[in-house]
Image (tube, rainbow, N blue to C red):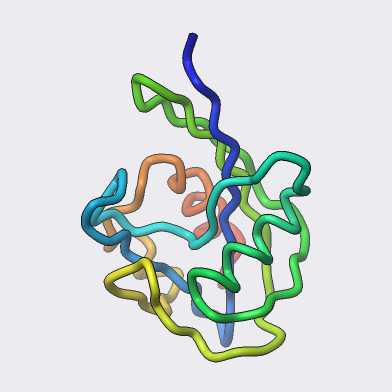
Length: 131
């Protein structure tokens, strides 16, 4: 039976720019860009998981806002189900601990990055919504 992994991703937008992070070596999907986040632990809400993951991975506290979109991606041995949410940084300074690079990008730059497949529906939605 294929294992289903529920993950969450944060769409951080400041001054019309979206935060993107590049996955580090040794991780699945290494080298791909993503919206930061991670796995939902048993008994955890998606919002709590997102707040925890961003604190762990980026050293920031966030206010988790509205749900954006869900997408699934079949990795063969498992299926990733990614749900993304709009988030706002409430405190902390962005510090990369698991990613090798980050950027604040404009709507027109969304197509220039090599996104992880599960993040593509969110990218498409942002292209429609951002001005």
